[in-house]
Amino acid sequence: MTEAEFVEVARLLEAAHPRWVWNDTAAWYPRLLAAGVRVERCVDLRLCHAILRASTLTAASELARAPRESWATMPTAAGAPHHVPEPAISQGPTLFDHLTLVPESGPSLRSQETRSVSAAHRQPAVPAATPAAPVPQSTPAALAGTPENPSRPAPPELLEFRRQRRAATTATDPSRIALLLAAESAGSLAAVEMQHAGLPWSSARHNSLLENALGPRPTVPGTRPAKLEELLTRIRDALGDPTANPDSPVELVKSLRRAGLDVSSTRQWELENIRHPAIPPLLEYKKLARLLTANGWNWLDTWVVDDRFHPTYLPGGVVTGRWASEGGGALQLPKLVRSAVVADPGHVFVVADAAQLEPRILTALSGDRAMAAAGFGRDLYDGIVASGAVDTRAHAKLGMLGAMYGGTTGESGRMLPRLARAYPAAIAFVEDAARAGEAGNVVTTRLGRSSPRPDDAWQDLQDAAASDGATEAARARARSAARSWGRFTRNFVVQGTAAEWALCWISSLRRRLWTIPSLSTERAAGAGESSTAALRASVFSTRPHLAFFLHDELLIHTPEQHADAVSTHLREAAAEAGRLIFGDAPVQFPVTVAVVDSYDKAK
Image 1 (tube, helix red, strand yellow):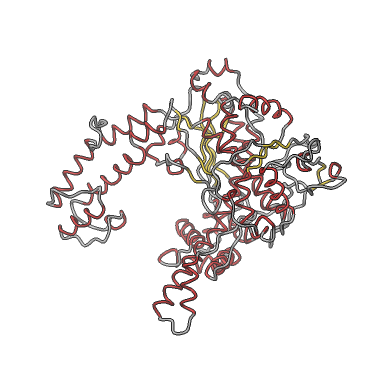
Image 2 (cartoon, one colour):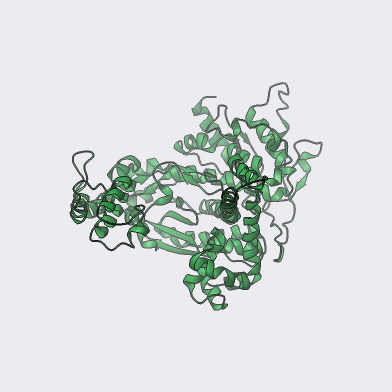
């Protein structure tokens, strides 16, 4: 079919709430959004393949044992997507009720009862959740092939979908991995929607803040703005070096050494410990140069179109499952430019931040009742102080970061023994993950995303250190490499599970926001929305929608009258994410919510 025909078919089928199975959401969904078609749910075969191939939960599957193939790396693939329609469920909608675990074939498929994927999962050392009652669902007809033409070869997407279903249904814990696959696919839809709608951005305000910080925009390409030229003159005068170049770390180190300063690098922490008249202007130069490079006029020209920033998110782009971004620095927006993120007239931002997300994830993973009590109904770090484990909130935060990231020296290392005495289960959990990594083993998140194994070079170091006649230097290198990999696995299980929580949060919120009534186009125009913006994001221009995501923070752009409803949905979605992953575990996942007209006012 033609693309126009595909769009119209999709528009009609969406009324029946199908689940689209396609090779890559990023390849197919943008064209539907551009035509005003929002997809409710899908299976992203590329993202799901990556999870299933590496997970310890599906290690025995055909998919995991097969030779590496194009599904593991393909950015896009040829072939039309295939929708798998499903009837509506008689009960109220749950987050992932569409992805149930059923056999591929059999005489009683259409009447088989299956357990909802949203059933809670058991958690050691804390009360287990009560599983949801079985939910009757019909099996998608496409799973059984195409009976109207049984001789027709099945498309590769359908074959891959069947193989992924076999891997999921035969996993050591099918419900966990199924929830992860559903959340990953839902996240892929949200990522494309945020890119399509864009983050409201005032080009005029951005230009003004650049001029205030750097001076007027240079008219000659490649020349420094006036403020940087002024700072450069001060740096060179203070060093007595007319050739000093702060844009080149190597040349700058040479200039600093010629001036009698004992430096090994130009890192900020090292320069801050030096007392010399060249250092203050040098630090200021480096700060402004970062602004110019990362979010200067070139960035504004490239990434902001019609007062919208359209970042390209890459779900699962980090090995832990965190998102990455492709160009534009969407996940690294500095505070200095957030004042340019301005809501449209008649709209506001509702910004939510998950408080102490990773420490709370660790609490739930480990089943540490004492830590759960410390964070119940209050700031977790304040609760740790109140328990007597440490004396200040700063020490509590430093100690927890050290536990999760392997900080065993300095103040962080000094706090760890105190935390281990007060919260033995939590600290033991990350220590066990670190020991597994040091031994070259794999660790797995709560829902089933597994860490990669160390590479061959790492294994060669360990083998050399264990061989007869190994030198102490070889053994030291092996120990260092082992400890480094242990720090990675220590954090992998926490950061990866936090990423899973965030995916469930996004997915639940995305569903909830769509239930809020849309303003009519006329009312939106009356509120001051431009026709350009309405055309650009027609699916979302008159209703609340996800506009920005940063690991544990969400920004919703909404008509002002819906701000209270959005705030409620943000909190309820966070609670739902916790229940989906950890069941009845007595761990809260609070979010702080702010309603603002520009992003910089949220914190």
